[in-house]
Every structure is written in C-alpha cells, then in structure tokens.
Length: 181
Image (cartoon, rainbow, N blue to C red):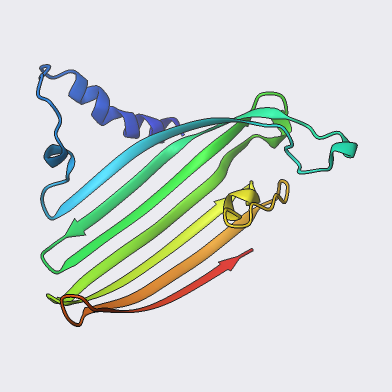
C-alpha cells in the first residue's frame, strides 16, 4: 500500500522541486494533447451516516462518520477516428466508531469507453462499467431504496450506433444491459 501511494504521489513531489511558474491555467491547457495520456487522481470523501444498517427507528439505528480514500487510474488513446479510454479506481473506508466495518477495498469501479468514427456521419460506441461496493444504496440512485450494508456489484455495458441522416435528423440505435448482484 505504501508503494502504491508513493508511486501515485511521486510525480507531484518531483514537479514541486522544479522552478515555480505563474502561468494561468486555461481550458485549452487542461485538455490533454497528443494521442495517448495517463492520469492518477487521489479522492477523499467523508460522510455522516445516521443509519448505517438501514433499520427502522424502533430498532435504534447506529450512526457514524465514514471516510473513503483511494486512487483512480485512467489511460487513453485518441486519434482522428478512434477514441479509447479505460479507468479503474478503488477506495478504503474508515469508520470513526465502528472499527469492525473498516475495509481496505470497500469500493472499486472500473470501465472502458471506445468510440469509432466509421465515416464523418457514422459513429460506433462501446462502453462497459464495473462497480463493487459495501454500500448498495450507491447503486440505487433512481429508486433511492436503502438496503443496508452488504456487498453489491454492478456490471453494465452499452453499444450504440449513431448516423446523421440529414442536418436535422439523426438515427441512434442503442443497446444497454446491466446486472446488479
């Protein structure tokens, strides 16, 4: 874990040793130039959960402050006709009172996105996503149903074809599939 953290933070520490520049960051500078790229991000969130196990008020719900911390890695390649990217992130959870719920890999997510422009008016797109979490309510954003604490997984895929028929008409054919456990 220390090696992974050191590898993620080393580029930032090394760039901090160089001369300071005062250039203003613009939107054009934030865009990744060139055909390939790689990114590493560190995320930290902290929430207060007033009902960790999603029990009725009569069963005396337990509450705690939860911190989630972990890296996300992303790589991609872009050309005139093809765009590809892949992303993977993981996070540890730390509870301030309920130490028995702490987990080193409480959340994982990954995915890929491929877009191919077959012609100037026709594009194909394929995406896939994977989520593994200890908090299933994260997967229930549409219904907001709270389940409690248990391991939950989601596998999802999307395939699509987009064709510009005229300047005002576009044909889209999409297929989505998802499996929640």
